[in-house]
Image (cartoon, rainbow, N blue to C red; front, side, top):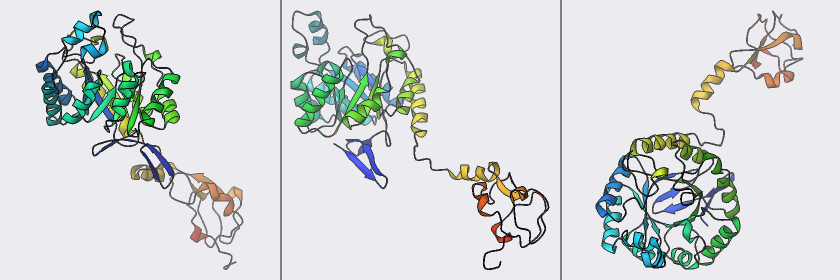
Length: 356
C-alpha cells in the first residue's frame, strides 16, 4: 500500500495518479460523475467534458459498457446498454478531450474487456463499479492492469468488502482507494439518498480497516455534503453532474446542474482549506495573543525590595508579558525597583539568587 511517514510517525495512505498524489492531507479529488448521461451520444459526452471543466472538476467519470458482458440478452437492460456502447475510437476521443480540458479521466468499466482498452488509451484511473464488488474477473482485471483504481463499495457489506480488498491485494494491487456511498435509486424509482442514510462516519472506519484512502460517492441532492465528506476525511468525492437544471436523464434526481455543482466545488475548496490538524498557530493568531492573553502585572503599588506574594500580582490584558501559568515561580522573589499598580512585571525587575 502507498503510505508515508513523517517526523511524527505514520502520516497516512495516499493514491498516486501520475504525478498527482491524492489523500486526505494532500490533494482531494472532486469528480464530476457523468455516468450514463450521454446515453451513447458521443457529442453529448464531449459536451459534458467541457461542462465539467468549466465547473472546476478535477476529473470526469464515464461508465463504459459492452452490453453482452453486463446483461443477459433477454433482459431489457441489454438493449438499453447496447445503445450506449462506445467504440475504442470513441473512448480514445473522450480521454483525449478530457486531458485537453485539464481533467483526469475515470473509466468505470462495466466489462473487463474494456479495462485494457482504457488503460492503453490513457485513462488516468479505473473505477470498479459497485455492481462488480463481488465480480472476481473484474477485480482481477483491474488489479492486474497496473493502473490506479477506486473500489466502489455501495450496497456492499463489510464481509464483501473484506473479500474484495483481499482479492485485489493478492493480485498485487497497492495503489487503490475505496469509495463509500449508498445506492437506492433503482428500488426507490430514482429517489436520491436521504442525508440520514449517508453514514459519513464510515469514511474513517473504512480507512482504519483497510489502510487506504477513502472517498465518497454522493447520491444526495445536497450541495454541501461533498464538503462535509471532505471534513470527515474523504480523499475523493464523486458528484453527478447534469448539463442543465431542467435536464431529464439517467440518475437526474441525484445530479447537480452546473451552477449548483460550482457551489459544491466552492464548499469543497473551503473544506480542504480548513483541514489542518497539527494545531500550528498562524502568525496572525500569534499576533492576536498579544492582545487577548493576560500577563502578570502589579496588583497594587509595590516598593523596592519587597518579596512578591499572591496579593501583589494580578493577571490582566494585554499579553506578551510574563505568563500567568508560571506566577508561582516568581512569588517570594524581591523587586529591584518599585512598581505601580497595573505595571507589567518583567523578569529583569526581580532579583536573582546571586543578587540576593
